[in-house]
Every structure is written in C-alpha cells, then in structure tokens.
View 1 (cartoon, rainbow, N blue to C red):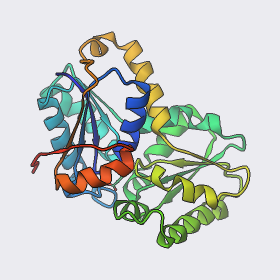
View 2 (cartoon, protein in one colour):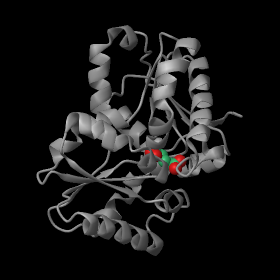
View 3 (cartoon, rainbow, N blue to C red):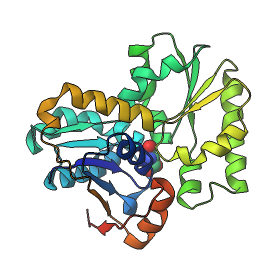
Amino acid sequence: MSPIGVFDSGYGGLTVLRTLVDRLPQYDYLYLGDNARAPYGNRSFETVYRYTLQCVEWLLQQGCPLIILACNTASAKALRSIQQTDLARLDPRARVLGVIRPTAEVVGNYSESGAIAVLATHGTVQSKSYEIEIEKFFPGLSVVPEACPMWVPLIENNEHGGPGADYFVKRHVAHVLEQNPEVDTLLLACTHYPLLLDKIKQYLPEGVRVLAQGDIVAESLQDYLNRHPEIETRLTKEKDRIFYTTDSTEDFNRKATIFFGEEVASKHVDLR
Ligand code: DGL
C-alpha cells in the first residue's frame, strides 16, 4: 500500500484530512498524530524539527510516496530542512509538502481591504513564515500576526465550546482589530483552530471573514497531483483510512471523532 501520509502534532491535522478525504476520496490515507509530544506550538525550532523528522521517517517507512505536514508549526519550523537535506538521504523519490505555501499563494485574494490577520501558534508566528511567503505572492498586503497560545490547549481539552473559549477568542479578535482596523480576513493558520469557527464568528464585526485552511490545502494538493503524475500514479486507491497515534489509542479515538467528524480506530506507534 502507498498511501498519502498526513502528519500533525496531534489532532489538528484531522481537520485537513477531513477535507482531503471529502474532496479526494479515491486515495488511501495514513494519518499520524504525535499526541505524546503535542503541543508543538511553544517548542523550540530544534525540537519541532527533530520530532517532525522522526514522524516523516516513520511515514516513509510505511510506504508513503507523499507526505503532507498538516501542521503549521511543523511546516514553519521543519519543512524546509526536510525538503532540502533529509529527503535526499531518506527517499529521494518521495515528496513532503506543507500547508503554509499553498495558503500564502491564495490568501490575498480573499481580502478587499488589503489587510489580513494570521492567527497561529507562538512557534508559527515567531518563525515569520507567513509574512515571508505572503510577501512573495501579495507584496504590500498588510499582515497582522497574532499568537493565540491558549487556543490549542482549550481545543485539546474539549473546552472549545465553553466560556473559557469565549474569553480567549474575544480577546484575540479584539487585539487584531485594535492593531489594524482595516483587517477584513482572519486566517486560521493552525489546523486545530477550525474547531473554534463558530465561536470566532460570534465575535467578528460585520464585513470581517474567517478562513480555514482545509479547502485551500485540498485544492492545492489536487493541482499538485495533476502536475506530478510520477507521484500520483504511485499512490494506491483503495479508499483506506489508517490512523496512528504516539499516545493512547482510546484517547485518540474519542477525540479524533470531534476533529474528523466520524469514528476512527487508531493504532499505537512508539516514536522516540
Ligand atoms: N496543529 C498545529 C498547527 O497547525 C499546532 C498544534 C500544536 O501546538 O502542536 O500549528
């Protein structure tokens, strides 16, 4: 079997997998959540790189010809090194793609005012990856970066529907608009954040939209596969969906349902 590998530090990548499965259902998918070491958001560059590389190596060993880092933090801190150095040694025919570049390529099209906000983990904001990539495609677009360090823990602890979430959502939305009242698009640049969509919408002034990445990543993957038949033809198409976690499978199965929208039966893998 040669599935598409989808990786995240934990559950967030399941929001991307959901869209990939809906829009490109013919392929086999192998999801790996590094739940034992999540969250990655506040970890150093070196640590995120080391953990991500281990996960990518494991996915390659499972036979994935193509791996999506469905985690902005890993895309920001590990993707470039993996693409430019590690892959040649590990499997030169395989490809590893991230979620930042495809998002940066289109995000400016959603803004009429020319000002957007990028809501993300501390690690993604600190890397400045979005500003750097967006500048290549939309020079002059004003980007307000906003780190929301409490959002992932709220979501991981199933508190995203509660009053704690209201407090932190309201605070960050207000902070973004204080910095630049022209902002008309909030990009959710963390794959966990779509679980807060309903809450975020409650606190948005009229005329401000919120954008999740799932559809953007799926569209970009479809386009990539059309342009790269040498990868596309290697992918098996049995509609298998396989889930692995580095932590407890019971916890994963319970929470994954919230992110993926259907029941999953995961297996455990020990990565250290
Ligand atoms: N889902 C990850 C992302 O897209 C962040 C979660 C974490 O902090 O591990 O950035």
